[in-house]
Image (tube, rainbow, N blue to C red; front, side, top):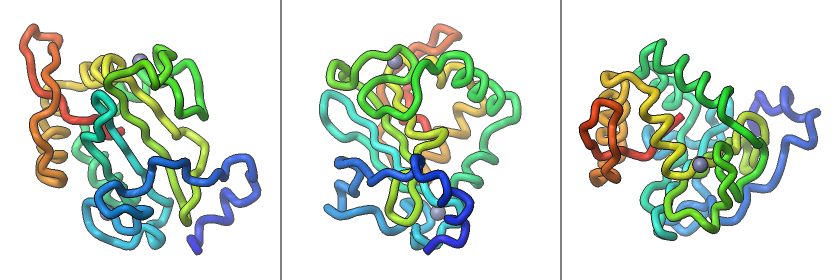
Length: 186
Ligand SMILES: [Zn+2]
Ligand SMILES: [Zn+2]
């Protein structure tokens, strides 16, 4: 059992079963290992994150990431970019705790062709707190565009190095150019 579980234990409403659809598609069972460092997710200090991204009902990306790898990823982002992401979420998020609509534009997931869902887990259960987080493709692009160019490059390189993702969907960048966007990790 996670030694830090006690901190959250008393908040009963925060704990929910991991919803269907968040098992590893690749392995056909719940995620057990970190997708980046292969550590046992149950040993991850502050739990772990699961992200799934879909385009046209097709899973294009999935991962489970331990606390240390989340932290390492956080170091790839510049301070202004981190601040911009926090500000974007704080200012634009309209709803919390649900998985069936974009948290920013409120469009229902069933009407979206592109979306990402991110949940926090610990000991095989979902923790409802800052996550879950749901983005439609357009809102994810808006968030991506809040990042500085260097952070965007760092983000994409980190995703490439750790997941070897195929080129993402082409999006319009603020400077008028187009670039493939990787699924955002936040
Ligand atoms: Zn890891
Ligand atoms: Zn949206």
